[in-house]
Image 1: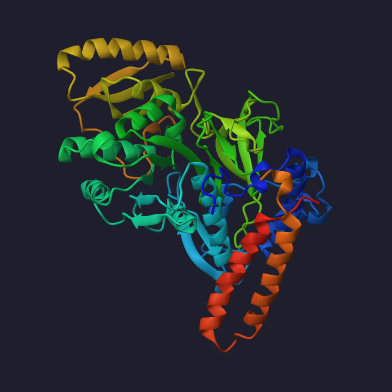
Image 2: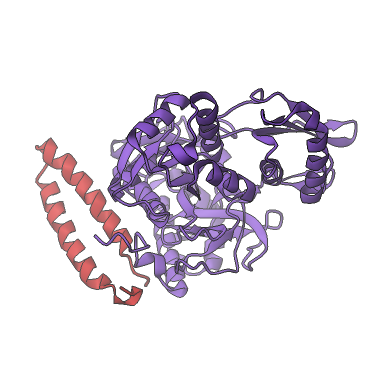
Length: 444
Length: 57
């Protein structure tokens, strides 16, 4: 096998754009027909909307198909066929995999997959890992909980599929994971940006191990949070580990839909051979086609059969890039990756605020630790933002006034908002192993 | 190899042959769990190959 080929699938990843769209519409029609024929949930949805699956021919037809939201999936589960409800399109005997969402936004959604779906999950991940330089000679360490949350499970199987030596770092504590990576000279790792930073911090403080010089990790795939494409966070991780850091986007209900390639183009490629990604205005729901304008991602997994994901309202905010990546893929790119969530990007004092903008400011200041917390409240009729940060241990307490002034100025410049700042002792804010919950809007 | 030089039709025809053979084995496997379950996995992998080679209409 030629390990220098940059594409996992050189046929689909370089398909001319006009062929790609034709292929997507063909596959979209097929998955909608499949869902209509095999699930009461989808059939009712489409009949109510007057959609005839076999008449879908254009993107306008696609947009007439009703969207599905997470809350709808929650409402059908725990009914027959138990526990998935009537969006299930295969007999229960065909289901070989159970996973669920993280529960960050509420009751977890159950996700059934057949063996074929699981092959597909791993294939989508193999596409992104190959694009990020994973090859059979790599020894890949996965420091996650191997639990019901889907997290990096498909990454594990994709790593095997590529032929990498795949090390499950499951029920180990953070220090033990670092020592195992050290012992095995692991070359690659997958984790949330939050946890990658925590691993580095623990290595330095508790084990006197410098990840940049003592470990052999040369590439890190981040998922679960957008941090790997937040410039200051990416820089922090790359410096801490002396490794290339790549972003990846996906979701339990959808699959692994987006990835940063080894060119690090400052955005995510959409795997358009496996997904149809539409962008719409969050308020008018009109399609956003032109580059440079942000919108909400509505996405379809074109080949996922057991519990289809058709026009799923992801709540992710993205921006179509005008730039072509040097990697040669014909897939469209989202500049900056997932730049926020429509349920996160919120108006504070009349200004749109994305938590990732605060993250970029905090992580760009070496005087501050990796952790922070944002709490928005209402004080009378006025919105109030409290930002809790930690000074790094190496910074003298008498410098906090200087840091505070610098932080206030940067926050004002980047977010156009004023904040109450609270400085906490290093290590006192919450630490996370998977997804962090740093933004709390208590006005709701 | 450039995109246009990939012999997708030839590869797809061979995958179809594989699929037929695997399906024949599957149809013979009702009373042979080790055959049935392993061929089921092979069929899933073959389906993935077909997805990987699917052409636009």
